[in-house]
Image 1 (cartoon, protein in one colour):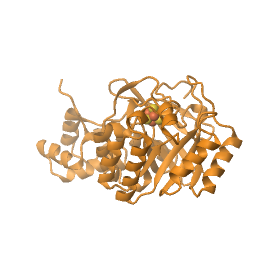
Image 2: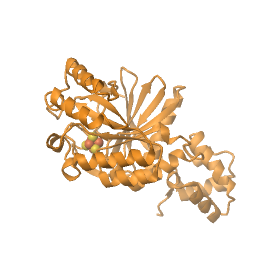
Image 3: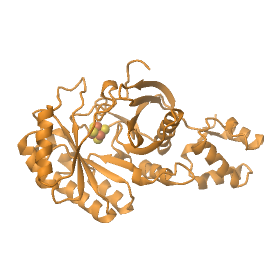
Image 4: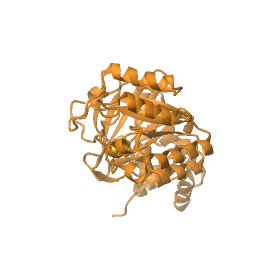
Length: 348
Ligand code: SF4
């Protein structure tokens, strides 16, 4: 049997080509895009302003690549986590977080992860595969539908779910095109944050695209010997190279970078590390997000005590670094930073 075309994988121009091949005018593409991206149609049969003949042809040749929702967990704080099944029966997690200014969706970009960051559950099962741009896009569409079913609006996107986005560069660039395309998601990239563990050549490639997104770089240590231990990618791209690439990113895009730093008890949360970190960041155009470590059952690590977090924050602030301590959202359903593992258990 012929494999059907996933219509979410087609940029509008290619959709026009597909329709023309089926004998239909270009304006039908616009109608289909409205059904897909604004009305959330789940089948071609729902697209009632298309002629029956076209709906039948589309059902024969194409499919809408929505993901199967296998499980939904809801946190006490309103965070929701979804486990989606992909066409090859792999699974992936997406999280929707409630903020005062609106909802944010945390999207996965790979099944598993190769990077092996010490504090993170996503890499524990190893790496399975990259997600396609259409699979990444489908997570957003489905999160958007879940949020709008509750009368709320999805305001921002963070590529911080499982996977290293820049290790899936081609799909991410195609996804970003769909995000800002007014005929598809039509969201400004100013509302999107892409998080990376520090793939230096890809940071430089992204910088050259001069996109208005926010780049969040995971530091988690202020020196190479500690960062080698916490983030193995540092052995390939040490701090000096990473920070030079980040500076180039800021120079080319004019965008303020975010640095992420997970505070782990007794490992990277001392006065010495706070001072070293302040020395690295105080002259840079950046914001620092401190993330209290979120428990992962398989890992013997603990979060820093509240007083330690406060002391660490105070040292950074007194050096002039702009710091936020990230609010813990979704920790009771393992939906917080570093907890996604694609093996959700519990009750829907
Ligand atoms: S923190 Fe990000 S890059 Fe590191 S293992 Fe987890 S998902 Fe991968």
